[in-house]
Amino acid sequence: MSLWEYANPVKFLRLSERVLPVLWILAISSVVVGLVWGFFLTPDDYRQGSTVKIIYIHVPAALMAINAWFMMLVTSLIWLIRRHHVSALAAKAAAPVGVIMTIIALVTGAIWGQPMWGTWWAWDPRLTSFLILFLFYLGYIALWEAIEDPDTAADLTSVLCMVGSVFAILSRYAVNFWNQGLHQGTSVPVATGQRSVDDVFFVPLAISMIGFGLLFLALVLYRTGTEIRIRRTKALLAREGRN
Figure 1 (cartoon, rainbow, N blue to C red):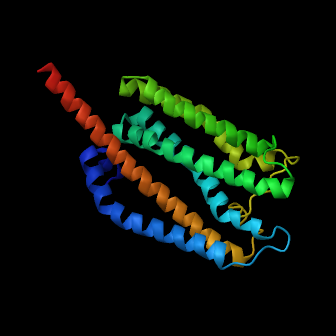
Figure 2 (figure 1 turned 135 degrees about the horizontal axis):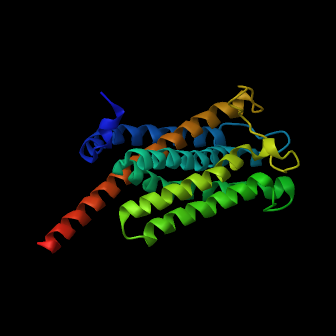
Figure 3 (figure 1 turned 120 degrees about the vertical axis):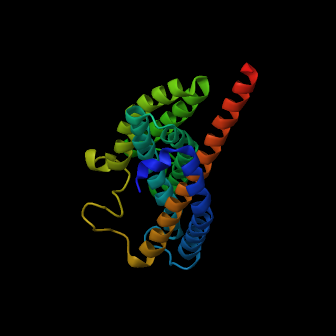
């Protein structure tokens, strides 16, 4: 069985219909367990107090905001190379979810930053690149809506996605590039496997991160299926109009 089989809209819809019920249950369960455990069953940090608990929302949301753009990049490249419509629609479907994750990350970051830094916002390299990424999300969605021909829209948004990926990378690694930033380093560096978060905080954080990832996947599958059905409906209406 080849993965490219699911570039067929019919097969993709059949797969998503089978997978989504289980995915919704796993996603919602993981998010609820992670947040309840993190907010109500973990102690306050000795330095940050109860403010530290915002990591259970902020870190997973920021992670998904960045990874959503990378997912859009991959599916956009697939569209440009192989011209599979499902991949272009998957990128389109992921953008609003990425916007919401970015807003959550920006808002929770401001709530955390005010007591820690004494300000709601600072032009820190990571914060600034993250804000620019948010603007790219908005531009990406607006470009899809502004162009009537879907293939042309997919082409242009794919190019925009490649440009915006620079800021997705900066959002992820800005702390490593500019040491003078206020934002702390990554709590769970993937490359080294070392982390600065104690197990009492890390376990519910990991569950919350898994939950946000599953939730993102469920939302993208659901929205991609919706986009496929909308395109089918438009094609049928256009065919009837010609007849």
